[in-house]
Figure (cartoon, rainbow, N blue to C red):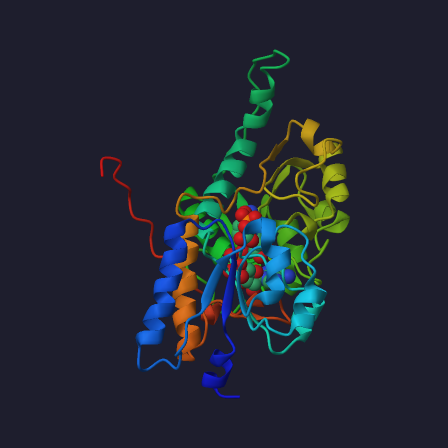
Length: 357
Ligand SMILES: NC(=O)C1=CN([C@@H]2O[C@H](COP(=O)(O)OP(=O)(O)OC[C@H]3O[C@@H](n4cnc5c(N)ncnc54)[C@H](O)[C@@H]3O)[C@@H](O)[C@H]2O)C=CC1
Ligand SMILES: O=C(O)C(=O)COP(=O)(O)O
């Protein structure tokens, strides 16, 4: 089938991320620009429907292109049976919400992600958790309730070895921000060939256990998929140095949470900072709530005032590339579950805002 024939079948785009009317207008304008561009074989109007979380399950089977992150259960069998969907542009970096077996197996559906798009804010979140652990902010905050506002030992970051598991968009940004802090930075990644200046060593994934054993601080920034689910468990925590720290800004289910709880309870780990947990929100019965050496945030790593604008910019760039027959940014290798670094998209440097404007 030619591109023209494929595009002929694209009649409806369904959105499910927190867009405002001006974002929808930006997407419609991009489609109009493509239609008016004589070099792009798109000759008809395409409907853009903002389903929101309320209507995503109902409307996804009517989508030729889906752009978003469905956080409610979606009946993917119904979507696949409709045989319309050709492209999923995830508004999340993580693809655990849409890379179901049927989508992976269907060659007619391409998937692109928001990998790396939220790296600046995820790195800030990682720093907030990490410094909170080292300087015992959780413990001192709890003193309000006891009350017992006394000095306790704190820890330094200087001189520590930090291990980053997954050196994609987020991992690289975290390494860049850590670089000036007089730390040694190790990382593992599926693609260990291109070591950036920020890290002291980049190892293949086969050396991740060694990274756990060598680091004083381990930060998780790898995707959740069939091969990484519970890949951090009792063995990895036991291998960590006594008194080390653990931060997870990836996905809760990459970690066997009961093993994390046990390692903290035994005093082997000095602390853990988790933006993500196996079940979200974290159930009230979880021992993580009462551990003074744990900092928990409710999956806010990607939050930023710029997030929806940045996401819509990527969406529009990729829409234009799609209809121009160019390779998409962040196109995912569906069998691996993440994009190759050569197609990665990086958000332009954040510009300072001027409140008076
Ligand atoms: N806390 C939050 O709000 C956020 C969480 N995330 C999570 O973080 C993950 C990473 O996000 P990005 O850096 O944007 O994605 P990315 O796709 O740019 O990077 C992922 C990296 O992990 C590497 N990788 C894959 N499997 C691995 C393994 N077994 N061991 C070591 N490395 C491995 C890949 O080669 C890739 O370089 C996402 O998949 C998502 O689940 C992403 C954004 C926000
Ligand atoms: O981009 C990701 O993978 C995130 O974790 C952000 O998730 P969210 O869309 O904010 O629930």
